[in-house]
Length: 333
Image (cartoon, rainbow, N blue to C red; front, side, top):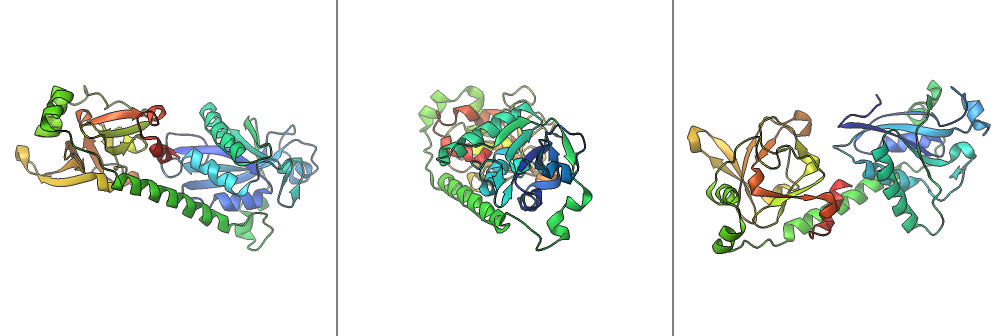
């Protein structure tokens, strides 16, 4: 498996002996497949012995295929730097030589920008210069078969990385998310008085959120919007949904597989229009948002939150800080 799609993504990472780095990366949630090989050298299809001579210019590298709905590129690279010293020149642990340099090799230009920001963060954390390469992948030659999944085949074999650090990294990031979700739960989102709601909301916004109306499909504001950002209750500003969970359902209204956290939504049985449905309302504002159905993508949990554009306001990722939602940038890490 390799190559990029909307969901499955591939990046190439170098950080010392590829035996240990591959075993570590496989432990991160969302990593689907790996392979070890030799990246960006001058020799075609080199052997392990040739690369170890230090004369071919290749780096021992791990190809990582991952599901971006489970782990973002930012989070994957943070996991990489959790065990790789970005300031060490041609060395990781006891492994020394040009082939053991650290590097990030990308196949899409967008990944360069993401990796550059993560590398800049490493520079802020370290007193010594960051020397991790950031280059486009020009060639990747798979290593010999006995190198693939080496530590699975040879338990207790040489490894310069403490593989328990994968679990350490996972717990650390889960703790950050827990703090973020706690902040959302504990925040107060005041509901404006009726007079202010009438003045501030447009006609359709008022009808949808206050009178349980439904806007027209396909012609609404956000059905076709897949920009990066969050959707908040148009009445109170409470964060409700993330673009990370938005998908094209073909129904004509914005569709999400889940809320940012379940706590921000209330569900209610709806028997209007001779149907039995599950209505979705916002927690703080009690705004009518739409309905939830059990016909969503199975790989995303099977739910489809069908939401009126008029019930929410979209805040682009690069405006989160300005709008007072900077703490939610973590949702995209």
